[in-house]
Image (cartoon, rainbow, N blue to C red; front, side, top):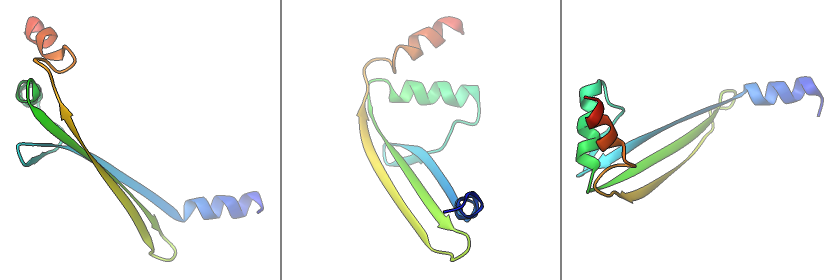
Length: 91
């Protein structure tokens, strides 16, 4: 395949993806403020959460789409990687 053909084939595909946290049955997007981020960390400490990630690739020429997703449950300790304690000391 010639370099220009390879470039054209690559440019025809649009990859997209996202990941979210699921906590107590509610999907949580990225926090919108520092206060919300701290609350999320407090909520996750000592609890269980799940992360869901997905990828979708769209062929822009044909419209064909193919996607996959995965969900992983995460159990936490009293603090999330020590962050909660460190952040609370800074506040």
